[in-house]
Length: 412
Image (cartoon, rainbow, N blue to C red; front, side, top):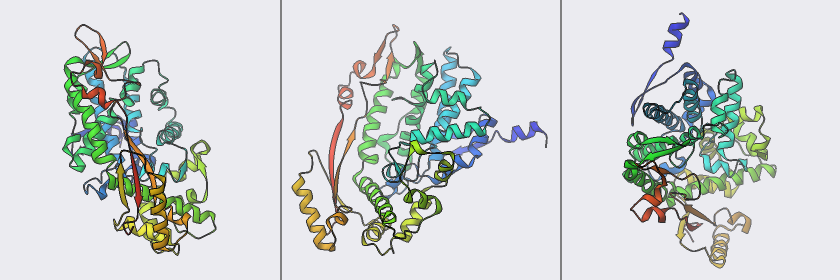
């Protein structure tokens, strides 16, 4: 087979249930998708434990990355049509950056960030993966990394990857809405992209797109309350955090806790993202949802009451009770629940704290203090969408709403 037919064979077409056919636009992107680091995303669910609430929510980070890349391709086409110069190198860099923007997610991502790797957000690990891939691909990702880190002199390119109206959000809102069946979150991503423009090196939306932007912000707020912060999904995720913390605690106490090679490594060590070497990154790249689910199936039979009980609860969806309030949970109320749990299960206060705990959640659909979504008026003036909108609720949506939750066993 000659090099020409090899190259042609890499320009594959993938069928996506939302956008239809997605064409892989270059051999570099094909090779990145083929890489084991990226293929791992097939085994990382996009929405963590949300399938316990919405049974259809089994789509993966792999799915989302391809969708975001498809939208980025559309955005570049729209901006070029409007006279914005974007070179072939810049276009490929944008496609690579958005394709790899979530590559650092661990299994059940947000739960892992609070229990396995200390003090590290997935964006930092994504960057480590991108730098490792850059070495593997002879420096061909350098421009993509520069744009991803917002170190490139054309700032609007970074905004397409990461801002309040980026290709990441445009895909995940529509995709998560589709797979959960929560139609309130559906956004018209094509219409929003068609309204994009650039003014003074900043991404803007043409004035006639104001209603689409309003719907996008409202959809984001609804998806957070109805899906991402749904109380059942929230308690399931917190349970997983507690399970992993307990497993780690038992390992430190010298107890045997069976797990896959990759999961065992992170249970045995206290590792921060700053300590990640290439070897640790390789071990992290072996971690996916199946390591965690496999461990839970084993841990339900562990001698430790806490680990066993919590694992059974999550596997069988017999979750803790959760109460969500507008005010902070009174400490005495929490202590009463702790005492009851200690008495019912005949366990210590420290063990009971894995079953009784409080926390907070917040929702801010739009931030007026940072990287605002700006409208380009017919007169050429640029204004913040919240100030231009005749919907008073947009300014209201920019205020952070915080709620407080308490979790405890249903036997209480």
